[in-house]
Amino acid sequence: MCDIGTDHCFLPIHAIQEGKVLTAIGADVNAGPLARARENVTREGFMDKIELRLGDGFAPIAPYECDSAVISGMGGMLITHIIERGLDVARSLKQLILSPQSDQAQVRRSLHRFGFEIYAEDMVKDGDKFYPVIVARPCDFDMVDSYTDFEYEFGKLMLKSPNDDFYEYLQELKRKNENIINKNPISEDRKKQILEVIRFIDEFCKSRACRG
Image 1 (cartoon, rainbow, N blue to C red):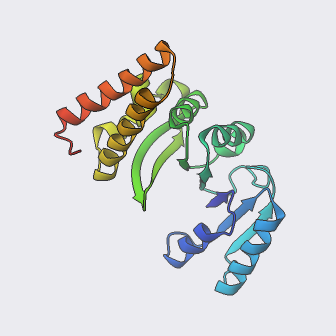
Image 2: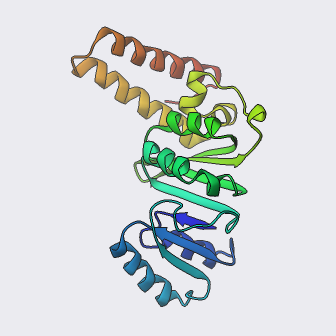
Image 3: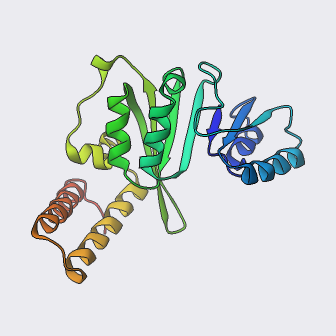
């Protein structure tokens, strides 16, 4: 596996410790975090298992060098940009594991545009933060699934098999959107968009007997 934007290399270290992978590559665009990552890897005695590389996105990774890549801890627009610039490497992988901090819909739309099938999703709450997880693999372009706007926004697979954290995420999103309408001057078009999202959440939760 390779961890793009590895920062302190906590993810590859944990993956090795848990026996999820035998070897890993941690890549980061900044030398400072990579130096701290090297200290962490050395302290754990994993220098023969984790290789650290300086570079932007997939630039330090060769096609078919890894079977999976993790890109997390950054916004969806940046994740999309990284995949697009390194598409030859991304499409050589067996899977992409993504956790966008924003712009989930953009990530899903871009995955389809780049020829990826989204085959697993999850929502994880840690403290007061919600972390969506999107897992995709390369496919033929004619195999790409069709999504509605709300399926791109919330995840078609998450809507089919929601967990408790996803329900809680929807309720938190509903509260935030209601605050936007009630406490901020916004255009009628924007208000209409937000009300459509709130209506969708209400109908979805009602159909699933959602708490909240």
